[in-house]
Amino acid sequence: RSTYLSEILASRGLGGVLASGSGSGNGSGGKDAISLGSWPTLTSVATKEGEKPPERCDWDCALATEEDPKSCLYSFDAEPNTKVISPRGTTQYISLTALNRLRRTDPTKVEPMWHSRYSILHSWFSDHSEYSLLQHVGIKGFLVSSVLLDGMNGMVLKSLLILSILTVFVALMPVLEYIVGRILVSAPFWSQWTTWGRVVRAGFPLKLLLGQLVWKGVASGFGKLEGRVRDYVVDLECEILEESVPLTVGVDEDDHVEGIDVEEEEFSDDVEGEDDVEFSDEENVEDGDDDDDEDLSENDDDAVEEYDMVVDESDFDEYDDDY
Image 1 (cartoon, rainbow, N blue to C red):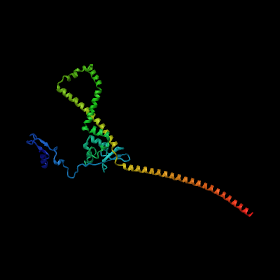
Image 2 (cartoon, one colour; image 1 turned 120 degrees about the vertical axis):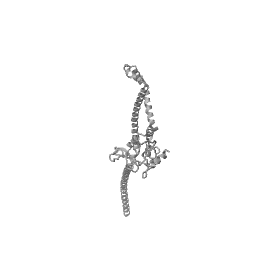
Image 3 (cartoon, rainbow, N blue to C red; image 1 turned 180 degrees about the vertical axis):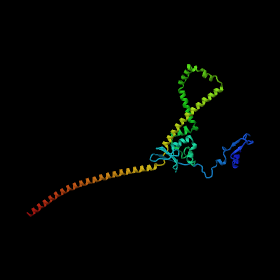
Image 4 (cartoon, one colour; image 1 turned 135 degrees about the vertical axis):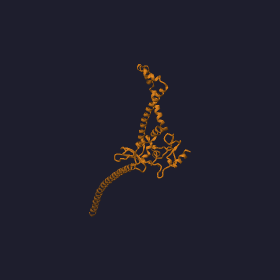
């Protein structure tokens, strides 16, 4: 019935105010006004004409260097040698560390960085998203992100911190017991009986008030300690993201150039090897030609000697015949 009534009032343009009582209207008649601004209506939850709901998107990760600086939506320029991330197909970069720290401190300011066009939190930091950055962090990142920071809405971190404090307290119990015992039997403590004796003999309301003050002090100190520990864990999570999230922009070109260099080196090595082989073959051929020439020269000498011998014998035979 309240939803139906709010719709009727919104359709009539009454400003979302319901008068629950009647009065004279002079400010003293007891007229109560109930604001309907917090009540959801079909108009408030519907997407306005011309607007689109935030869309899921993939991401691009690049490395900001001094030679190739990158702009940052959170600050003017990203720090050198840090990773920046943007929705796929855009150049609206933001530092990965700044984005993670912003989503941990104030998640409502993350998506307005891109004018609420992209569903950044659901796309990049959800366990059920195919574009999640957390799928690259490994077991260490899982323990830090999903267990310590997100486990039971932060109760895991608080429980571990309380358990650590209790462990330290139990370990130091003998020392604390000795110190408290010495204070209770010391003369300076009892010399101040007129001061703290009034508190001991005071009524229960005063003791309850003092107990509340002590509890608030302890809770405030524990909150500050938890904040420091949480900041340390968030910084650790940022370091893990910086180390584990892969680069998608500027990597292919470098790999291509490195591959070309490697191929050129291999080609030059192969050419040098072939030249060495050809040169060794030429040497072998030249050595073989020299050996053949030497063999031929020796054979020629033998042939000349045999020819001379044959000629001499023939002449001798002819001389015998003539004789």
